[in-house]
Image 1 (tube, rainbow, N blue to C red):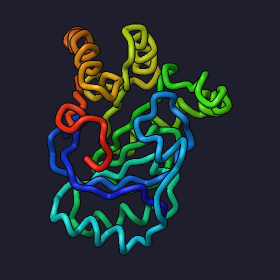
Image 2 (cartoon, rainbow, N blue to C red):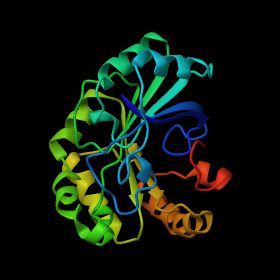
Image 3 (cartoon, rainbow, N blue to C red):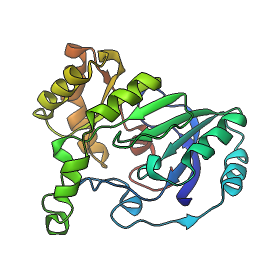
Length: 227
């Protein structure tokens, strides 16, 4: 399995924000979000091939109860099912972070699904050569419904502008998602941008019953890897 990094930090986003967690970040993605904050797993995939046992030993070395399997898109990684099964046998709470475009019968305690909105389409990046594929794959309602049925879930949306809310509301209705399971997070990798967007996004959450998520790791450490 190609691994970009494994590190110990706190969960910075979503329902489990603030929980100390080991992050296992796979490399490789079937999407190309224009604002991707981990381009080293998508636009220019980096990392090393590691056997499952080596990954498990690194995770165990941190003596932590929570593990977050993320990417890239971890659901396309070879042996992802076996990895999650062995993490469960080790007694760990598992969060799977996915865009919800691919289904795999993984083992997890929280399926953290982040459907990509139209604001993610890379129309200009690399002359738009990924735009058509990204647009075709980014929203798969049948797969999303299956993930939501099979696992405890959160739907986490990256919001860049107020106009995004109409698209999110349409998705909520189509998927019949519970409002309290929807998490809104301001797009950005700079504290000042996140704060600016967060102020109006918090008001949206108050009016809709959706959850607001900070990007706590950005607040604490800025836009850095391994935190």
